[in-house]
Image (cartoon, rainbow, N blue to C red; front, side):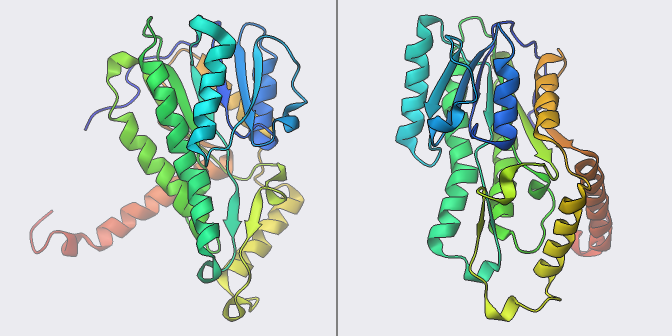
Length: 299
């Protein structure tokens, strides 16, 4: 199996960052952090560019409209960045952060809801990533770059009431790992899947879409309702919640520390502990089916 991220990555002093979903939360925190680095260049994007007014206006900061569900919008954003920064345009760091949660009774999800969720979480990430890879691959100085795909603990562990959100994040994880194994090591293109647990953002508000409830799933003892109650209790007390600023600092550290880029990074103690428990649980499940898996032969 082709290894990934085989060489240490060194962030250039004049690095150019492209970030999707900068209107709030993690994207806003990362954009704010990069804007504070005077030698770095920032391409901050959002569906509504007026939401980027918190960023200062200078030659190193480009604010663009970007709808990741639209190939035309992505093409326009990349061509605008090339025009703005001129012949010396390079792209060093890409952070695919745009997304929202679709939650509720899965059987009641509409075709439109499910397709838009996958378009945003998965296909949008894939479109931006492949466009960025072409630019990074053609860097004349072979400087490569890092593509951070923001997944979630939901890309490792599945919980009731969020089936299509999990589907999107699981898809991002598998797709990213596969693409990471396709690139030639000499291109210097690195991939990192970021897996935060709960983050103190506005995600629960405008970044969360709810499926219309189904009558058969409304009892308070249904798994999704029990989980939602538990999560709300934790959110109200701030238990296991990370700040967007801490996530931003962690991503910057991964890019700038001069070491090999890890393929996956659970962020937050809750994410790390639950990821570890998930993999340990899978080992137990493997042992339980060892006899079946061997088809009568010794494993």
